[in-house]
Length: 371
Ligand SMILES: *[C@@H]1O[C@H](CO)[C@@H](O)[C@H](O)[C@H]1NC(C)=O
Ligand SMILES: *[C@@H]1O[C@H](CO)[C@@H](O)[C@H](O)[C@H]1NC(C)=O
Ligand SMILES: *[C@@H]1O[C@H](CO)[C@@H](O)[C@H](O)[C@H]1NC(C)=O
Ligand SMILES: *[C@@H]1O[C@H](CO)[C@@H](O)[C@H](O)[C@H]1NC(C)=O
Ligand SMILES: *[C@@H]1O[C@H](CO)[C@@H](O)[C@H](O)[C@H]1NC(C)=O
Ligand SMILES: *[C@@H]1O[C@H](CO)[C@@H](O)[C@H](O)[C@H]1NC(C)=O
Ligand SMILES: *[C@@H]1O[C@H](CO)[C@@H](O)[C@H](O)[C@H]1NC(C)=O
Image 1 (tube, protein in one colour):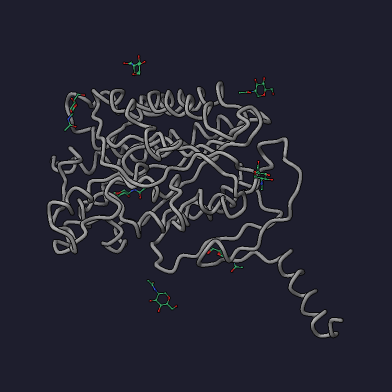
Image 2: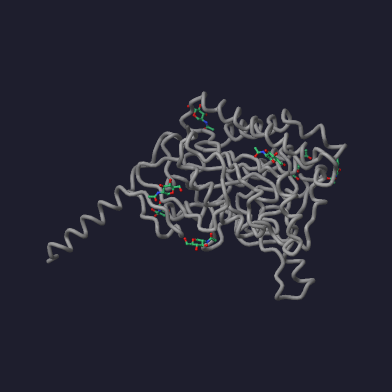
């Protein structure tokens, strides 16, 4: 028979589990949610309701270069490895065991989640003219529903969706019509960089960018039932180059050729203006879907106003000092996860890198916040 003090302890513990929101260092420390019936409205979703996850994007989402150079192995092999797409570690769609990624945080609440990408494979780069060809190579390994393509711009979202929608319809073990799904979209870095490529500049105007994003979201709405689109703002890429230039030891292999605007006079200013204009488009798109109230479809928006000039240099991969490292992806996964549960007006206006960043444990009353 429990003593009076142990009873008190049991009561106190369950009371705490019911009420206290917590921030933890590992998702496994988060209390589970109280089971409930499956919600019928997209405005009522908790983490445990998400059964399927997918992503559209570019080389950040493919996980290109995450591991940087491994100095403990021969240089040639290190170079080969460094150029992998580490899709299993990508912040928003990776599902490698114990990785700090959004699918793994969801999996803590919904063990049957599927669609995340696993493992790594050599990079398949696309450029403005051959993204479609690259797409046909996806899906052979652990790509899952990670439809991102290294090199893609917003113009290629249609090709990515060809893959994503067909793969989602065919993925094993889901109820395509009824299961709740989440699709992350983060794209725009290559668009900004492409503004200094004279033969591409007309494809990357804010109007074109917004149009491609809107077309992609409309197509998701028309062809994927029960889905929440998680639209993530662009990164202010122009701020990366002055920072990485200041750290020649970490950035031995700094590669600014990946971004045509990085080496053109006035290029950074052009990118900075496009960054603002793209994000304004994303906000407009988010607001448009806010007004149309569907029970089976919505768009949420995460403004990620990173304070890049103050980032530690190892946020960037030693591969090229352009793509995020593992440390970078891990941190981004936590920041975006934490934002999912905040109302729009509470999302941070400026986000500093925090090496001790914690993970928010949603409670029963939390919802993936739509407003
Ligand atoms: C968790 O972290 C958030 C953001 O840093 C903070 O606002 C909140 O107060 C923290 N909650 C707890 C219970 O510590
Ligand atoms: C996961 O799937 C299995 C097999 O379909 C099912 O028995 C189990 O209840 C599911 N778990 C959750 C948390 O939905
Ligand atoms: C893209 O590739 C797919 C599959 O290879 C093909 O069916 C489709 O026609 C191609 N689209 C374009 C615009 O080239
Ligand atoms: C510039 O754009 C053209 C036309 O789309 C493309 O073929 C080329 O690869 C681009 N160059 C760079 C450096 O991205
Ligand atoms: C979403 O629900 C509406 C009715 O509210 C229905 O007309 C539409 O077909 C549904 N969309 C999908 C993709 O199932
Ligand atoms: C983006 O970076 C530029 C510097 O390249 C800076 O002037 C601008 O304020 C930044 N924009 C935002 C929204 O932080
Ligand atoms: C984390 O916090 C501890 C103590 O609060 C501090 O000493 C340490 O420097 C922090 N680490 C990072 C990477 O910020």
